[in-house]
Length: 339
Ligand SMILES: NC(=O)C1=CN([C@@H]2O[C@H](COP(=O)(O)OP(=O)(O)OC[C@H]3O[C@@H](n4cnc5c(N)ncnc54)[C@H](OP(=O)(O)O)[C@@H]3O)[C@@H](O)[C@H]2O)C=CC1
Ligand SMILES: CC(=O)N[C@@H](CCC(=O)OP(=O)(O)O)C(=O)O
Image 1: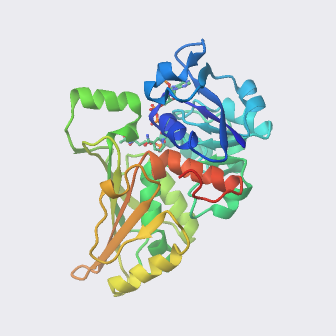
Image 2: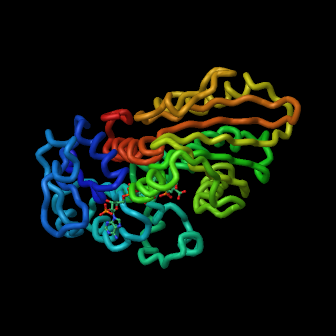
Image 3: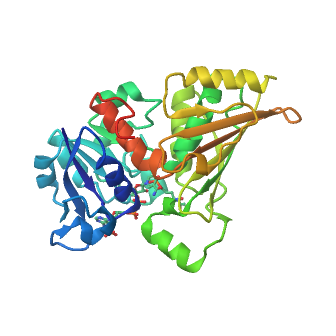
């Protein structure tokens, strides 16, 4: 059994990790860590609905975690884990970090977009960007996986076959994404439901969102060319789910059916990616509580633009589910184990 720890258990993604890992056939949960109280608490005092699990929540102590765990999931806000990661990685513990701290290859880019000093720069080059379907071989050998952001997961999976194919303009990709409120973390979600619900609005428009450099970095690596995007995120009035609509200009005329074929070939054998038939549109309900990403597309013949729609559950494929998929890959298990 893989001895597994979750840090940040009181948050949305920590809870989702526990939900998945407590039923995983190859996992024994050996550590749950939170803050708020330096005293150990029973899990059922944090989450009454997990009363069947006889587990305790402890205060974070990097050295103790390393002794008790083979793998640790970090479900903490950005910049909180800088002190923990080096300790765990140096002790040979595998780490899957759900924050953005190790996603951007250049620490100066991270510092600019996250407005915080990167204090574990030497670990950035040791990390692998954990988009499971695209970096499988590197993830197999990784000690530190930087789990992708939720918006980047829908967007990159939705457009990478087109981006790699050479038939689209890589400087004019327009992305319009909508996220359930859990994407903002538990405290912001509570504030939203108290003050705003059921509002629907855009935010951080015109290149203002920190997922812009992450998406551009990965699409540029995958295509071998500089990719530029326009990205507009929205909050939608549901707890979870994410839908991205991606508009790309085509350099030649290609029929929708031929593009769908290319996508199916690209993702052949990848269990969690479903390329839908022409004119079948995915909705967030179709993927809720699952690790699937469903993708649909159609060519707008009037404008010669390809329009792609990609949906996930932000807490599963967009965070904790993909993190477990990465753990499965790292430990040589079937990718679908526990999922
Ligand atoms: N929610 C989502 O859809 C996605 C989230 N992510 C990323 O995953 C990470 C976790 O997100 P999420 O679960 O939504 O966040 P939450 O805000 O719901 O949870 C954050 C967790 O971190 C703990 N925490 C906060 N500050 C500190 C601190 N200074 N020291 C120690 N612990 C702290 C919180 O404890 P306490 O309860 O005591 O405040 C809580 O357990 C973030 O980096 C997020 O950006 C990535 C993809 C999608
Ligand atoms: C709805 C909402 O507010 N979403 C968050 C997504 C942030 C997130 O999850 O950030 P990382 O994936 O980079 O950790 C936001 O836009 O800031």
